[in-house]
Length: 244
Image 1 (tube, helix red, strand yellow):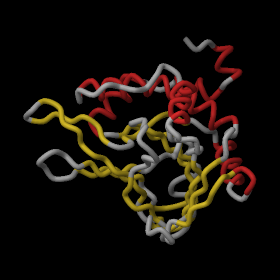
Image 2 (tube, one colour):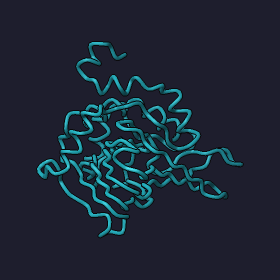
Image 3 (tube, one colour):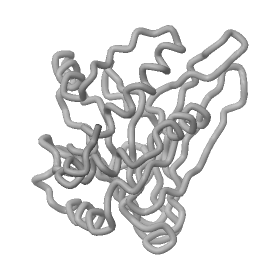
Image 4 (cartoon, helix red, strand yellow):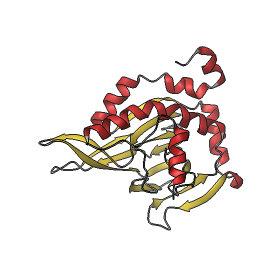
């Protein structure tokens, strides 16, 4: 249980705990994604946007246009991460873990994820997945992100979180978060969500269970970002497995 003292020492955990987690689980089971509370304050989002030009904080930079990933740019943080990134990942993992295990049980798969994030990342590192995966993304006018999945290796956590660091309608227009789910023997289903300022959005990393005539089937899911019509949009992406 998170106490008031704990929340004062770790405000990010308090914000994670403020979510209605049964409702989050219900929504992500229905749609593959769910909105979370405000995980970063407006002041913290300004600080994160300012970090983008601090080269020493990042291990690599990717130009999306160069690799035909869309248009825009993103940077992978070095580990150890800035304090809010680490605290949010540590707080989110145990809340997402029951959903992940439930999904794998429905699909008849053995869930490989241990009780703590540190144990899971050690498993990733032992398997050769040692590169940090927290991402800071930057989009300008007409930039967009192609539909994709953040896999990075054989060991994958099936949920991840993105946080909008700008205010929609003020800092940018467009830039909706997109999910495309390929349902078994059916048409693909898409959803678009405009993420509020500082709020998180948890979504499917690779695939998830959906009901079918045979019980449960795995539906592959990809995510992306629609074109920015005006302004600038930054996001923080929290992936719960490291990269090979």
